[in-house]
Image 1 (tube, rainbow, N blue to C red):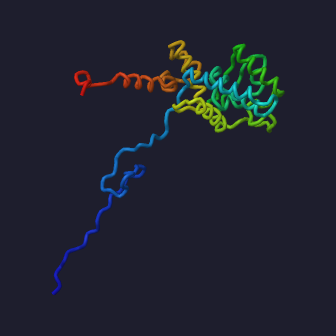
Image 2 (spheres, rainbow, N blue to C red; image 1 turned 90 degrees about the vertical axis):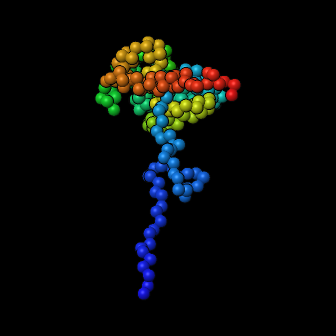
Image 3 (spheres, one colour; image 1 turned 30 degrees about the horizontal axis):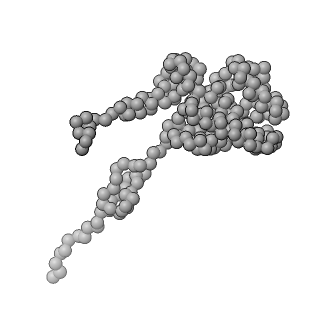
Length: 244
């Protein structure tokens, strides 16, 4: 009579939760980490003013080196104008890219935002109006032509948001900016610099057409800045044991 050996049990294998990384040294190890080193979506930051000035200078140097009247000269002058309009007008990227000479005719800027349906209607500062007007005159744009395009002689289509992102990101990398920035950082810089000058969150909220000051505080990275400043001052337990 055969002896009963019992049912055979299959060996259980460790299942790694979806989206979590395996151990890099031994993926088949019984222990699997519970945390991830992947950052995921990160906060888009405003520009520090000194970094923005470096980007300005980089554009001007490239523009001076380019052949006069060439598409390369147009491209670098366009990039410089994109920076200046972004931090002085505080518009969304798409709104800036769709600017035509008609948008600022006579020194008054008018636009209806597609995203929110809200309108912007105000007098431009003389310096920014002159920058726009001189650019338009130099490159011969008519009233309904987009001034931010891929090439001066390309079809009447504006840069895409992705192209604008690459322009700003490329400049940031060229001057050595390490924090996370993109075309959207121009609008954020406008808001943050306005707050730094006024320390009035409600004024910034109204200018940005936000519905709540909490939204504005998050938008200009006040919370992240405060947390960083707090962490910079934390150092516990070292007072009596500095020489160890």
